[in-house]
Length: 400
Ligand code: AMP
Image (cartoon, rainbow, N blue to C red; front, side, top):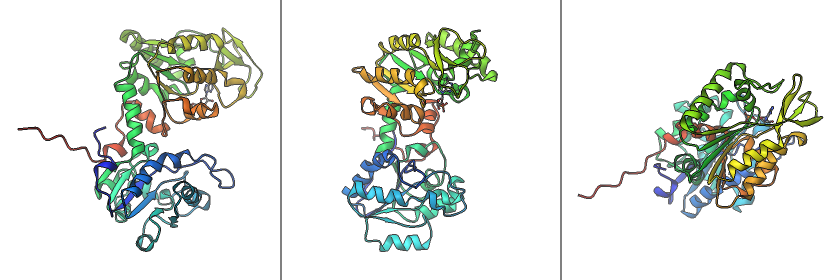
């Protein structure tokens, strides 16, 4: 990564403002149901404390507020309390993220760690409003972005603020870029990419970017049926994006020209109705039926391809993994990946990460991205604005 990190700047006695991704899931009573986004930010927070930052000011969004002020259900207060348990020191929590009261409270605060209230209570955050960004910047001396999950968004706390402060990456962003970047730009080969999920349209740019890089691309999940349709195979009522049939055909041609194996579903777990768990394994999808998972022959076929891999990138579940009746394909492939030795396995965020967690296999993967949308855009080859805005590492001075 050619961006400066928190290690490249002096933060001793400085006020450091860190954009973290504390967008944790909450239950109906406002309790945090999964705190991995908090633990993922700890290395950067703890480093800033250890290096003697005078204040460590944390800012994040949570959920999707209307942007018209405080909403109790989306307050970051529960996160402050959970964070205290991890860092074993008090966290000051303020009920806004900008303004003179917040500024004064930071100055007067006895606590070194401060969590600001949900950034998105202000519309200006998502609009990347310069005045709002300047207000945030005025709270600190150094800015650190460690919110990989929002790095694909140009918001005031990810991009705007970098106009006003020395701006560097935190350890989570550094780690994400190292694993995702190496997996597709400098992988140990063969590189096998597994793509699932439901929408072809979401993955076209990804497949285009990966065809020149991957050795094999496995396509499963709901998106596979548009490809099968393009090959003239009957798919019954399975997921189909009619307007993407031609695109699917083009992608298959491109893969063939590039010598990249593109592996599609060969057998199916079919049902008469999406809502029903009454299903059977079949080599075909008759009219009136739809396929919600890959069948056993497909699983063996995919595993054979994966057995040759040295690097695997996985984005998207291979069936409706949320339901017992249709989870077996995703589970079987996840367990197979977990059993592989000396293979780098990088899991994109979102549903594939949820699936790996559901099967209790997180520890067996080399890296699980914390950003669904951000990892997808990175793998598509897009520049993430929140990362582009950070300071570049100095070029090494050349010897005279
Ligand atoms: P995406 O957001 O595109 O990654 O899609 C994830 C969703 O795809 C999950 O909620 C899965 O339940 C769903 N899914 C995977 N396979 C299928 C399928 N064969 N038919 C319908 N939905 C599917």
